[in-house]
Length: 101
Image (cartoon, rainbow, N blue to C red):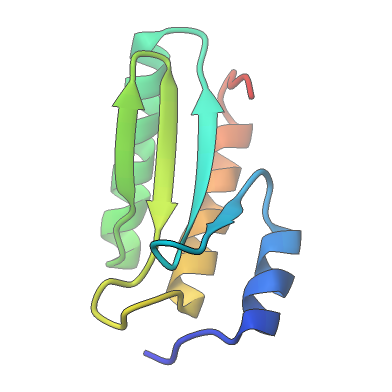
């Protein structure tokens, strides 16, 4: 897997909803606030299924109704197109839920 250039990362972030760069960990992240704990868990379950289908997995932090997704390709040591693709899929799943930002 090829690492994305800085320009490719910036372009990818413009196409995503609410994602930002984590320069210290060479990842991107998005935090979503859900109405309650169970709706957050349902979102995480949907993302888990999408990640399995893609063969690419985010790091996920659950804090009651606040879910943070971190995307990076650990094996490549940074961001790849697979991260941008899964981030876009997560955006689709979030838009299908009653999420709050």
